[in-house]
Amino acid sequence: MKIGYLGPRGTFTEMAVQTLFDDKNVLKPYRTIPDCMDSVANGDMDAAVVPVENAIEGSVNVTLDYLIHKQRLEIVADIVVPISQHFLVHPNQRDNEIKKILSHPHAVAQCHEFLRSSYPGVEIEYMTSTAAAAQWVADHPNEPVAAIANEQAATSYQLDMLEKDIHDYDENRTRFAVLAKGKLSLPPYQVEPYTKKTTMMVTLSSDFSGALHQVLSAFAWRKLNLTKIESRPMKTGLGNYFFIIDVDCEADDVLIPGVMQELEALGCGVELLGSYPCFFHTSLKLTEASSV
Figure (tube, rainbow, N blue to C red):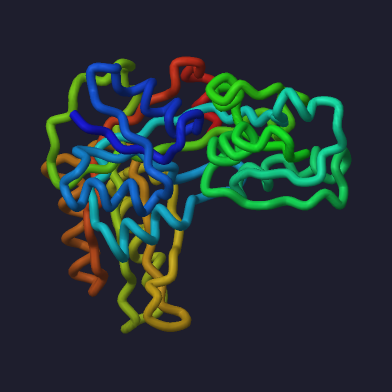
């Protein structure tokens, strides 16, 4: 199998991929999230692993928007990975004053307090991933620049960890989605799933008030637990939104089809984005990760 993921080497996405898939598969990094998804849509890759939600910063909007508006792939699995951010420098710059800090926007936001207290006023430049920031630092040994990235990036690019665990919250986690083009028989996963989940996209009817209440009622009276509900713009005008809903169960032959039929009868648009197993990174226990 060929698995694409958000690269370069040393990203948290790579950690997710290595937890799920063994080295018998072809693992290929891509520069951006859309590039990963395009690689599946055009047949270059069998599946793609991309970040979809962070416990601190919320949803990764570029993933959701590209999935809905550009490349409608199926969610076939997800995995939660612990996030530990470190302050990395090239060994040549260990004792020098840092003039610039590179990282992904989410990582910068996750380390706000550290940056404000330890490096106030230092220029921050955003990169496509934390590993891309680490790679840039490694490729420019004479520049007084630091990267915010993980320990795997430090090892991959031979950087020094000037400060460890600089993230603001200890319970930081990111959820990654495995996307494929339709039904796909993936190779056996290296870890066991802890539950199964169904994700749906719902657009509300504008013909009557209380539409969202009616939508939620369709799940409630069937005693289906929702783990997430989020609105995103349809990009067709102000006030036009769709909802992403995660249901804490596998799609069956009765309850989920019943919900979809009821919502369609109410005039809502409904689409199943995936029903799939959910995993944790091998360093997480169930009791720890369930707080995500």
